[in-house]
Each structure stands twice: as C-alpha cells, then as structure tokens.
Length: 87
Image (cartoon, rainbow, N blue to C red; front, side, top):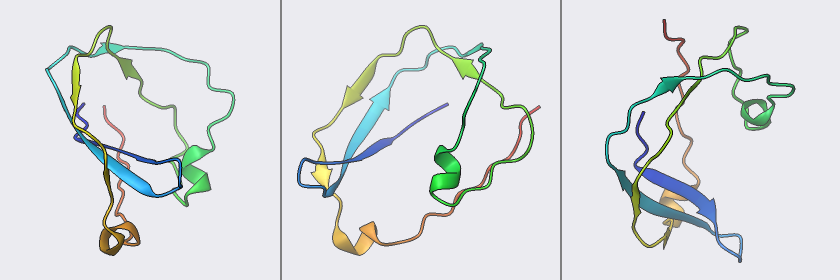
C-alpha cells in the first residue's frame, strides 16, 4: 500500500496537498467490527456488498513535505476511482 499525497483543507477552507514518502513496511492481516461505513457513499462511491479486506502496519516512517494550496484548475476536476476486491 502506498500513498503519495495527503489532501485536506486549511483553516480558511481551501484545499491543500502535501507530498509524502514512506519507506516500505510489511502489511499484516487485520480484523475489525465495522458498525457504520458511510464515508464512501457520502461522496458518491458505491462500495461492493462484500466483507472488506483489512491490513495494517505496526510502524510506518513517513516524510511529509510542506502543504501547498491546490491550484483552482485542478480542484474542481472529477477524480476517477475504482474499487476492486483482492483475493
């Protein structure tokens, strides 16, 4: 699993992005009791009706660059998202 950017908003509500780098870290299988999972639906993503696959890492070293404002030309673009089950 990798993440290259972190998106959030600043105190003024403007979208910002920070570039990330992390060293490889082994993933381990995980279990969880999920009572409510509505984050994806709140932004229009329909999750498959199946049990989620969960993993975690005990430790992760991350290097984060300073956050920068997201350019307005990019902020309004739709983002293509694909969900595919593994295993």
